Image 1 (tube, helix red, strand yellow):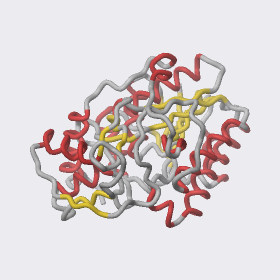
Image 2 (cartoon, rainbow, N blue to C red; image 1 turned 120 degrees about the horizontal axis):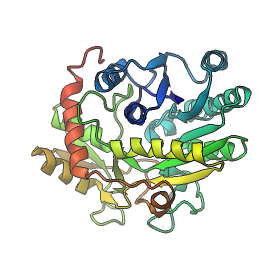
Image 3 (cartoon, rainbow, N blue to C red; image 1 turned 90 degrees about the vertical axis):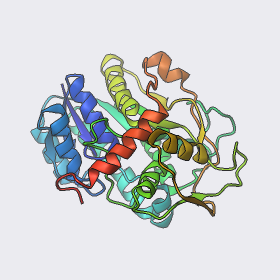
Length: 335
């Protein structure tokens, strides 16, 4: 079965391609590499032994998207990753995020309606919840005011999906970390890393002098922000489960994708240090605009309906993240 994967050269997309191939799907990538790198395309081929069809196109270009859908017949479903993802950048350039994240989905839905493709797995985010009143947060929680333009684009995209006529599953990710065990694919975003673990890896590798922890005066276990960190392989597998669900059920749904456990920034730093036996230099800085104090998932629903749950450890994720950091500078065509 053919599955189009927009943003398939990106961090989550590339790992999901591996799991799709393992589950006997035939993925087709649409990715213009605006925030990814061809090294992930090459890594996918090395890992799977297969050359995955790839369109180097922009999902916001309606003409190009129409041409792809005209060419590719009998598409069973779409997994839509193509979106900008930096909370910090979105506060500085909100228009870029509204135009791309919402615009690409609207064009994709237009193509799906025109060419009778009915199933979509959407890459959403736990940021849709804002600062939740109750933890762990479940899928029925009311959407509070978005803490960033990025978060608002995910809220608005989910609204667009609910108003559409296609079948969809929206996966609300918590915080993906780690990389493929081979070290051949990982987070090679073109922008400067803004997420915790890639920054930790750059400090460990001497690319950065130290890690700046954004605030230590939150009402949490140690004063630093708390997040639900999920191994990227577990996250990738959830998309395959969601796709099978769509193919077997004519209904829409929303699922949290997380471990159900919160980890503070300082605890995450400690986990990296212990997993890799490396000391991380850090200092305390100011709070960052758009950061939620504490959030972690209630994942009962996804366990019950999709029969999916996170199985891999934080230690494994920290080790694979470090392996990717050491390997990526040597990968051909990485820039």
